[in-house]
Image 1 (spheres, rainbow, N blue to C red):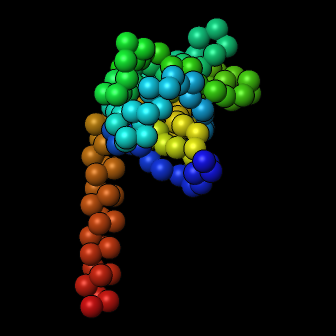
Image 2 (image 1 turned 45 degrees about the horizontal axis):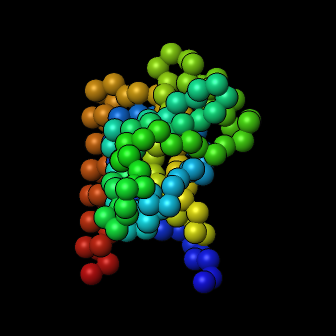
Length: 155
């Protein structure tokens, strides 16, 4: 069977861009079991409460929800288990240095298949305050209004 090409989005963490300023983003591979891959191929996953940590030189994705595969047997995986992220040493060092600073954390942004491999986009992020969130909403609304006006003008 030929390997699939392109990118297929599985899950997107919309709250990440709303709650955080993403300073830098990285693409990481995921170490998964067979039933997890099958559940992801069905498009079932959630990154809403997920976060990433650096533990003894390794990156880990914590609290990401991948439901149990319905066709699986007793070998099914735990839905919120800790999953290892595949990153280079330099990337891990950047993330470890950045997350040790005050106010920075590592958040997953999206989960997708890229050329048949499960990938997660993680970002080094700084938390937003309430006024920053309001400003983000204002700019988003302004962009939406501009798009509407352009569509009306084209008609």
